[in-house]
Structures are given as structure tokens and as C-alpha cells.
Image (cartoon, rainbow, N blue to C red; front, side, top):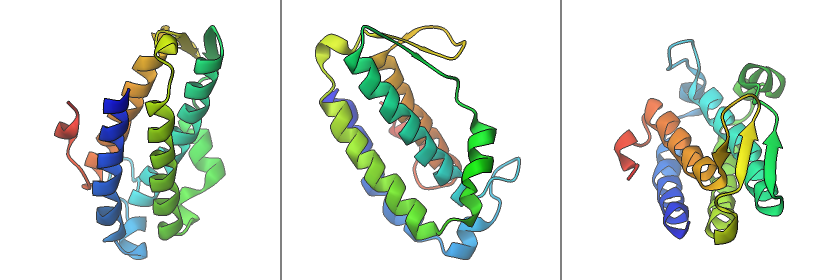
Length: 153
């Protein structure tokens, strides 16, 4: 998983200064279909980091993992990303992902095939969850113009 960890760190190091190039005002403007702003996308990515952090650690500690469904709309509503400071969102996102890169690099090889069930979704492995987390992150960063989808292997 060290390869995935290195890829995650590389994307964070590339995307962070690009995110910081947008002003507070620019970050609040809708940029995606449905009206999401860069603030809301980065807030969603923080939420994704938080949820996946728990999934990764719990799956590494247990014989299998059953985790609740992710309520994207509810989480966005409660956390009000749009009203958070842009610099705060960027710093939290970048540092959380640096830490997740550390966690991913140290996931025990023997636990990568741990079966994980998220809500009513099909069972997947811990390794799949970690790699899918990275794909999801890159997809959203590409949507807001700070990386390209092609950075994924």
C-alpha cells in the first residue's frame, strides 16, 4: 500500500497550492452542476477522509467490517461547508490526507482482504476501499480544476 500512500501524498502536494490560488470569494462560487462550490467539494472530501479513516482503522482491527451508509446530503447540510473559511478547509483537507497516507502505508498486509460492507452495498476488501478512496478524491479534485483524472495509475 506504500504505492497508494505515495500517490496520495503526491496529489495532496500538487493540489494544495492550486486550491490556495482561489480566493475566499472564488471558492464560494458554484462551479459544478447542482450548484456545488469548491468549498463544498473540499468539505465533502474532508468528510470522505473522516469516514474512510474510521473504515480503514476498524477494518484493520476486526475480522470483517459493517459500516453505515454515508449520508452525503445530510452531512453537507449539518456541516455547512459553504460557511467555513477557505483556508481552514484547505488546511484540514491537506493535513488529514497526509495522515491518511501514513495510515494507508501502514495497513497490515494480512488485513487488506478484510471484507467490508458499507450500508447495503456489495462486500469489498479493505484494499478496495483504500484504492476507491483515492479514485474518489482525484475525481472530485479534477472536477474543481486542481488535478487531472489521469493521475490515477
